[in-house]
View (cartoon, helix red, strand yellow):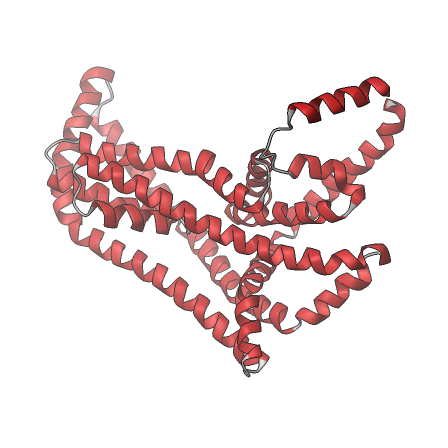
Length: 360
């Protein structure tokens, strides 16, 4: 039996290997392409509704893209407001930070024998390294801006030529699967809609937990900071870092103990841990009806291949893959790994399966 399975296992490993290489080296094309595809999937019901009410396809697509641009503009505006508010607190924060930093340096010198000159030299090397990395940051920013330009272009092309893409998949699939193709496409659109709905639920839960933690510490404007930080997590890593600076600085300025800003950091770190390992996999996976195991594998694989964008994009990939395995009998083994088991089998079902094994 093992000898019969070995060639098929090797074939699947080869497919996984070459697919991974293609995704990794083609990420400059695939990342904006699939961002555009998923935005097009989300905008498709809006564009279809506008077209049914007399608007041309081009005008409907333009209105959909304007809606998306407004949403991103609101998020960027919130980010800029936070940065400006933090800049106003920098002089007071610096005045309060300098004595604590001097005491910390003296403590290091007294307890570990590290002279002040060595500490200052280390700080100088660190700042020089940050300044040398400015070029890398600028290159990354340019690539991001270029991707932001390509995404709406791909979105508009997907929406405008959607019938051609549907015809492509129809001709690509076997005749025996043509009946299931329309169902797969419709369920894929619904799946990504459920993914967006699940993400909104994640932001609400994370914002509530952040607010509760900040209220427990007695931080001013706790609810505002809590939900603002949750919303800014849509920008991975940078969003949570920038949005957390303002409540941390407020805690440092308004409170007399350093434990309060450290408490804010602990609250955000704990909530982010819950969001990444418990809330996000369970809620989003339950909306996509994908197992938590498959969701975590998708997040890790996406991070390895495409970085942060892969963590975002690979989740709906898995959801759509499950839809395909639901309708393609030959992919049933893969479906058993992706499917979310919500109900345990009854005793009668277990006994029936045991009896079937005995008969075999």
